[in-house]
Amino acid sequence: MFELCKQLTRRQRNAFIAALAGWTLDGFDFFLFVFCLKAISGEFHTDVATVAEGILLTLAFRPLGALFFGWLAEKYGRRPILMIDVAAFALVELATAFAPSLLALLILRAIFGFAMGGEWGVGAALAMETVPVKGRGFFSGVLQVGYPLGYLIAALVFGYAFVHIGWRGMFIVGALSGLLVFFIRYGVEESPAWEEGTHKKRATVRELLGAARGQIPLLVFLFVLMAFFNLFSHGSQDLYPTFLQVQHHFSAEATGNITVVMNIGGILGGILFGWLSEHWSRKRVIVLGCVIAFLAIPLWAYAPSALLFGVGAFIMQLGVQGAWGMVPAHLNELSPPAVRAILPGLAYQFGNLVMAGLGPLQAGAAESHGDNYALVLSVTLAIAAVGVAVVTLLGREARSSELRVTVE
Image (cartoon, rainbow, N blue to C red):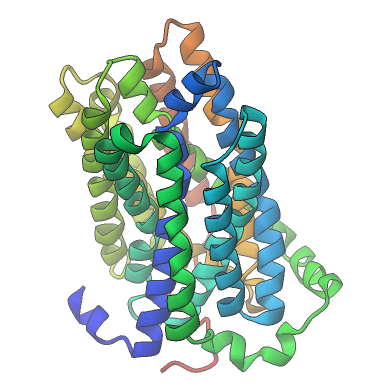
């Protein structure tokens, strides 16, 4: 693992750091809202399920952001569009801290979703097109752990700062993500693959959509795969802090600590499974993650103590994020060069769109059954783990395919 990192050139390293940091901050900003659901519902005198519609709106608008920013990245390059995107979601995060009403907050979460939707596709294209072919699976795993890393940072901020700054202060902290723009501006170069085909990237919207239409079977497969993948991740993450607080009455600090342990498992899963994918197929590694997550459900949802909840959550995210670690490489390897900034991001965010109503649906189902979040979460994860494994096995893979004309 360390040898692969040492082999990166400065250009490759900085491009990867920018993509990883962008995705980490995206996850951090998203999960700040998840942690604050209960507090926000209290201030605006409503229930958690109503506030959780902000998750729905965020996820629903992400495909539009993926399409818009992906098109811009194909036309003008990955680097400048990544800067614009990061600045956009940081500004919206700051505005959220001053939302005067629940309606205003929900509108801001929709706008945040639009900005968030562009980051993953553009950042992943920049990273996967820049890093060497050897080690791409490992770097894919590390890149994807930016999401649980962001979740972990959000858990730490929630666990130790929330009681002092409240939910509005949490979003002010989230706005600091905009500082990443300066690193991208002064430390990151454009994707070599995009530079080598610049004349082709100056395509019109019609030409880009035409190229995408030529990949309809692949697009449909990726849509279905990413729908199950998003059920897998959001079903295991979004309402878990609420589950711990509402059903088991854990304090903010205890909830934060369990979530930190959970995301350490996710980070290790992404790195470990990324390394495994250099020796195994992408598909085999994804299925392994699904099996681990499925077997962890009883401990993850029905543990008798806070300590064992931490163990169950650690194992669950080891499997979930281990499988997810293959997504950046797998989707970019399957996508044609002309639509690489659009197709993976659009497929990813369409999966989010399909699962956009999951948070309110889970919360509503749990509340209608006496706040039995454990049952709802268990059923969700069982369906998700089986779905990801089956769809993955039905598809193909293009492991280690060349994404660039030349390799540094």
